Image 1 (cartoon, rainbow, N blue to C red):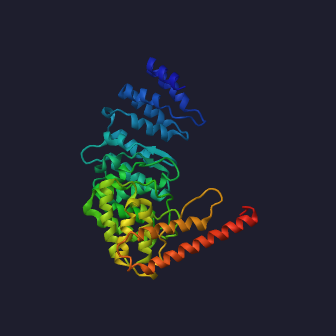
Image 2 (cartoon, rainbow, N blue to C red):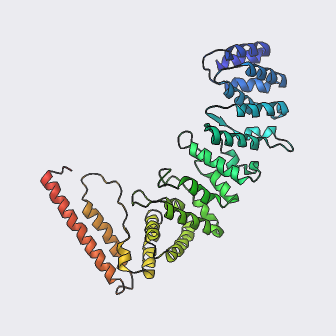
Image 3 (cartoon, rainbow, N blue to C red):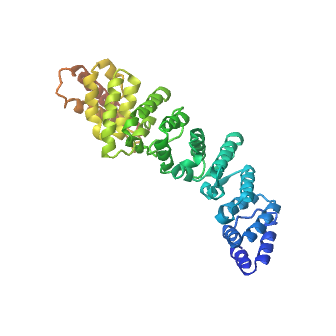
Length: 385
């Protein structure tokens, strides 16, 4: 059908528009013919106007999609006040899912009129007040932030809306280039993002998919990172399973960023050496995201706080994750605690750490005792759980 309508129009514009009008008058749902729309609107200004008149008279469930496609493909030299008004009217009439390419609306801008921003304001309002599923291209966030005319509230809320919608449909800002661009211009965006999406534990699922390593490109903004960590430690719940959302801030660090993060973490440890929840979360992050620095940071912490009772209150080994087969959990945990003791044995301050070493030895033996009980149980039950 696409080929037939396009060829008919190219051979005879009058007959082509007639056939297209008849096609649009069908009562059943019809798909949008993007190639045909492009052929008509780019042919001449009069053809475009005639086609728009047809669309105005057409009333089916896909009419808005055709009008949006028309506006997207309208040549810049044809864009005028009439089509701008029709664009705004069409955007206001959206009632359902729609994907908008904001970059296509620059052609309607002129002095004292920012067409893309006007569309963004309408979309923001419709999502907020009507819960419409209107998706935006990443363009304004990634490439043309000036469209927002420094309206940070509109930038932030529009991005949050699109990020939330992407959880249930088409992906948005998958590489976080839009996020990075916003943060480059508005450093408060980092905290606002986490406050919005991570107020509840694990509210937005897996942590490893977010690569925010670009935040370490700004050594003068380390306080912004600290603000986020303080917020997550106080608001979030640490349960030793699947990592903590603080780890998001330390994903995919290269050598330079790792060095910067290492010094940052040392300061964090020093400031919070007596805060059990804080230290447990920080070391969970170190185990998962900064393994190469773990031993050094572990010994650094103990140089600040070697209180054995405090040490006992921390889960220093974390959760081993999913294991296959008939796992002897006691033995698995014992080996993990042995690694902690091995690190401690590398310290030059052995006398100071005797109470902690005694605790570790008892903990390791306890886990091995548990392992023997597990083996006995598996033997008696025939490996049935």
